[in-house]
Length: 259
Image 1 (cartoon, helix red, strand yellow):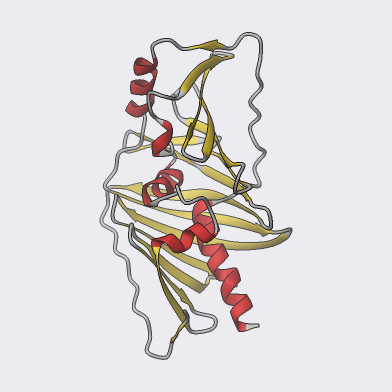
Image 2: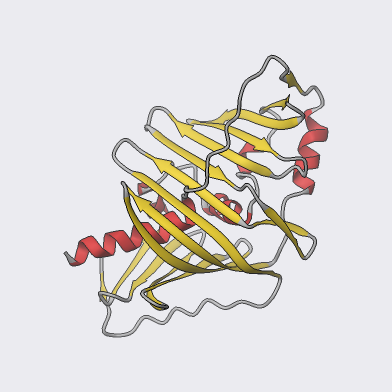
């Protein structure tokens, strides 16, 4: 029972960071009016110019998690230092902290405060829940409403559909499909690996301007594998950029280390 609760907390921690859904999925329709873009470089430059640039990011995310049909509600306090680390505190039960995690490009650390357990794994631990091409920078990008890095390359197909840009292509085993709004921000991202039977759908339908950057208000992701479906819906509030943040993470001596 104890390990089962810990597993749910691990999923909550990572899924809240990686996957989510609950908002309606944007639907991309192929129409006869779709036109390929010849000057890819110009469009890619426009998209890159709208990518959020920051040194630190912090937000409070009201979150709904759905694990194979079972729902959980929690509040996530998220802090990011660009390129260095992501700190997440998960609270539930009238503000009681149930878990805390730090994710860096090299490692994953989690404290389960319900069971007094601690886990430390290499970053590759995350690949138990998602595709191996999902790295730290991809995770960071998804949280702040930027494009998955490997999708912005000259080999992608860029299409104008109903006056909106779409990017399609593949990177190793992953196929990707992105749709952008008039502000060149990706509102829909779909990643799929047919061989591994994995899909990840990301929706960022709403953005707000903070410190001259377009930051999402809602982030929803839906991750499916052959055996699991994980949905997480996050609604951001009190988002701040470029202010000092810290990553408190002191593991009490009473905590047991879980392999």
